[in-house]
Image (cartoon, rainbow, N blue to C red):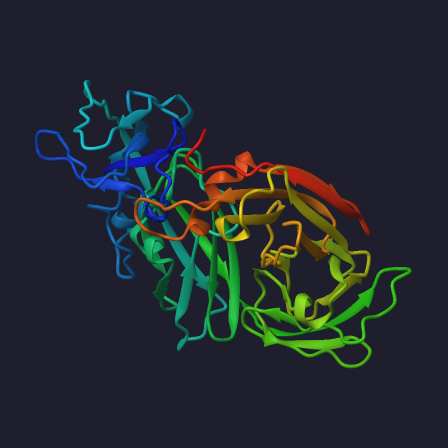
Length: 400
């Protein structure tokens, strides 16, 4: 499979929401030639791989020979002849013109391995839902187009008999398996052979939690409700205690309705069984104790433009915490001077962008391409209780 992936070069780095959704792809003809149409002018790198065409599907009825077999696919490479994206040559697509690659693209074969998942602690009527990859980064040289077919849909369902899934390249992967009443986590590393992976299902259960405040911070008038994907919102009692029910024993993100439930506070840290844990992947299990620590030392930020002659209707101000969190921050209306004031911010590092509103070639919303522009953002660090200002230049997304 051939993919043309937008690359940031020149005046317009294929800057459209259409380009963000997925790269342009093509299949080669029998003679190895290919043609890609409908490209937005700009810079691209060309990636060659097997893709999902021809990949075998997961099977639940298989022999020992099937379990031992190793498949073969096309290894990932980049035009012209590079093994890594960083070394790839950039192809520039010009408006109303046909771009021809002037040299052949070499390919090489690569083994594709199989994983045999064996459920343990499974009940006869269980249907197992397998999802992956999870929080582990994809192996070097692998992207979503290289993943087995079940991972394209995000899941595979099977019974207690287990399942054999072909199509994996060398590397490390993370999978989660869930039933209506149990769950398992499996980290898998593939080197030079097929692997057998036990899925040790642990029953779901209840866990106790408590919302407290950091030393020196008074409790909020109303404690915000925590939220897990399966449990939904849970309302704490007047002392901040709560119970999460039917919790699966797999890492899960914790949502907090802080902006609406406790303005003037932020989540300082989360502890599971007394150990500080990351909010986006809490190691929760039945019987665990969860403690959420709130602090009222929120920060504020005023964003001013170095050029104030642009009407507010013709610009977009974007502020994002780095690394990115799940909390979205709507942009407040500007004051009479054109400045924008953000309050109730969690201390940490932030990126700030001021964009001139422009029309995109595909007619989509400019907000959709902001992730492509964070490398041009101003950076600022906010400490607990800080009130800072930053002056940013209004940039045109088409300029580089």
